[in-house]
Image (tube, rainbow, N blue to C red; front, side, top):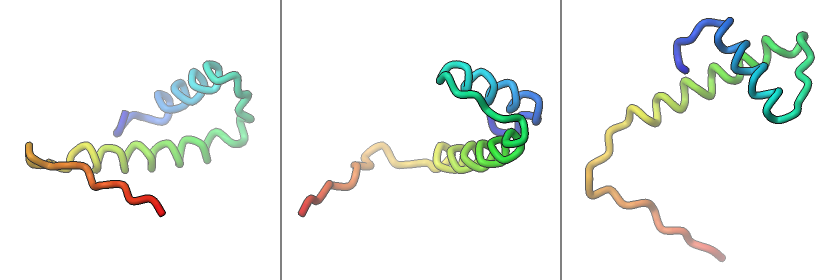
Length: 63
């Protein structure tokens, strides 16, 4: 969804809110859109980062 216009993001926000049973106050929609745009940009950067085929996930250490 990166690069989509505001109308597409507003439609997505509305559909996601409906699916989750959330009523999103129209006054909050610009802030929700801004955070969604930032999240989508971060996701696109992660997805674009090439990893070698032999890359392994980091081990998990628990105390």
